[in-house]
Amino acid sequence: MIDKERLTTILDSTHKRDKTEKLEAFSKILDPKLKTVVESIFPTPVYRAIMDREFTKEELDFVNNEKNKCTKNQGNINTKDNYILNREEFKNIKSFLNECCKDYLEKIICPKYNTKLNITQSWLNYTEKDQYHHQHAHPNSVVSGVLYFNGDKQDKILLHSTKGYEPIIVEKEKFNQWNSATWWFPAEIGELIMFPSSTFHQVEVKQGETTRISLSFNSFYKGALGSDIGLTGLII
Image (cartoon, rainbow, N blue to C red; front, side):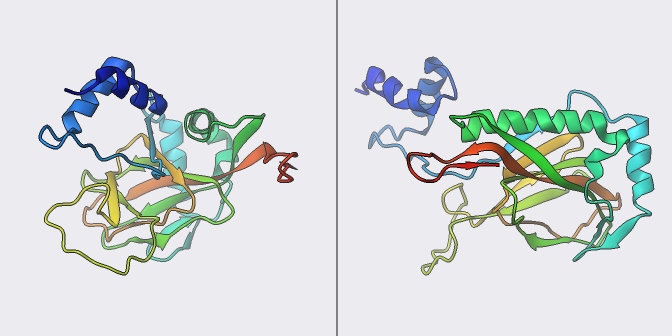
């Protein structure tokens, strides 16, 4: 017999679901013969949010007009303005993204002191058929995000594992979150995806006819970091 009281105590540490939901989720992945379960530790968080409205005509017109003011990137193009969220046309979108940064900070990082996650640089990306967005990460940033304005149903973002070099390779019969070197998420219009800036990611060669348009941004801490007692204190 499974000790449900003990399982409840263990699963309470995740702070994600109420006790009933946790037990149900646990029972689904529990091996009934061996009474074993695989846990994840030190995972890479991928935060996803959907805007509760459609983009306005003003916002879409602005996005389309900015395509004429771009510079070449590796595989596609992006705006010369790399603080684009400071533009008046994006004030409401910036407000939404700021709320998501606050939510990410509170749910994932959980700072003890008065620390904020502020958006730094931001820019628009345009990717046409047969173009791509090279594999890269975002230095000098804590969390990076991408919000999708346009694209095809098959468009996606590909994230790479942070585990680094693996000296032993085993051919996989099926893939899961533990044995995969990459993981993709659909690029849905109106959806925001945020992840640690150190996570390498890319857009593979685009197949559809519709221009893929996204807004990317970086962020950094503002406020208290570290501990004075631990001699790691820093005020930014």
